[in-house]
Length: 128
Image 1: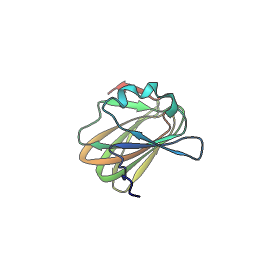
Image 2: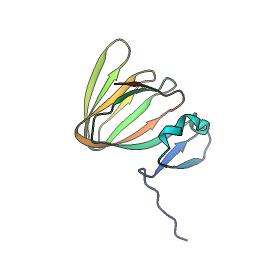
Image 3: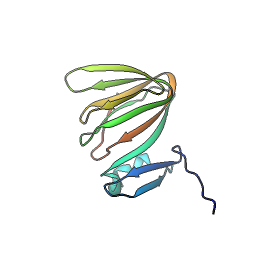
């Protein structure tokens, strides 16, 4: 029996609180409706992002840490913990662990691809 092999550009992976893995189809309205997806408010969501321009927002996850892995190229990740801002240059295969409650954004630099593992409950955004 053959089975389609998913990829992270079109299918995200939700690791909930139980033993099952849930595959989430990435539709055009995925990010604009994610707040309505209460099934994704627990556990971790694995996504991917191409960073070819600087992000235009900061984001923060108050309920859990986030791992940002550079799988291709390089990016500059900016962090703001409320007291000070800092930055870190990352090139594949490096990663950073962003502590819960820390605002973060990314600059393209040479451009890159990220794999992001996040605890999404209560995610907040602010303009850059």
